[in-house]
Length: 110
Image 1 (cartoon, rainbow, N blue to C red):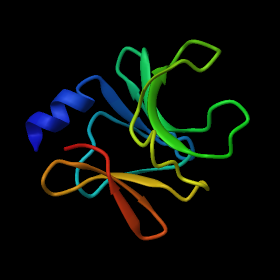
Image 2: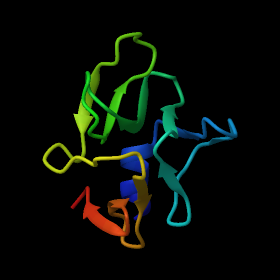
Image 3: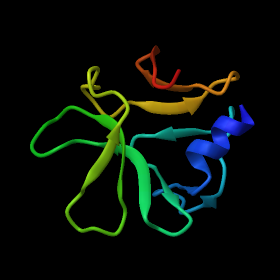
């Protein structure tokens, strides 16, 4: 689990847009809710929920943080978008990313 966390989040810091509390890790007791993002230490990338263009669907993705026009470089749930903003991303006990929405879960990583 630690290796996976370091691989995926080694450049990341958890930033809550509501509380503006910065963290440099995410573990099994922390979650990322829609509206919160993780920003890399160098402020190059961010991870969070987004809707492309005029779509109301919500996706988990990584995009360039400082580019004014959102440029997404990775999407977790491309084939299974959420239809509202109730999504929560978490790391489970085995180190897998899990996307939760209305008590349903979708595995994001293998």
